[in-house]
Length: 167
Image (cartoon, rainbow, N blue to C red; front, side, top):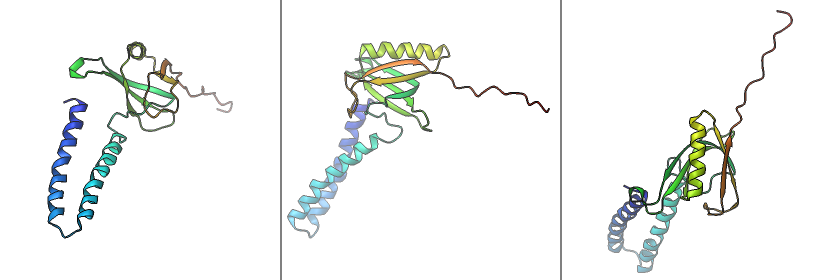
């Protein structure tokens, strides 16, 4: 089941409890305006809850990735593949100094697909990759103006041990 189908099923599954609550409310001894207000506010809580769930770990974030990140993995779905009309590019990233990683979903573009494929090949050759996002800064969703580039990650090595003179 695609993500859009899952979202539709979740949205439709919400209607049943609302309908049952509406039935209970209309049997309750409340003024009609109070019942109407409760029924109007419930969908707003659902929408806020639904969007908050997308920000939890495990769901791909639809926000743009940070400006600098370590690329851990990627998935590219071209338009038309597996019934997904628009396609997408998912980047699994970690920001320096952060213990947790995050999955970001970007709109598909052929240019980005080529860059991600090259970065994946470099990773497969043993060269960890850093990602850099420029353009579209400050936007709350990824835009076509976002430009991503990838470069080999410099591996930090501890300083060489020096032998002590006394021992």
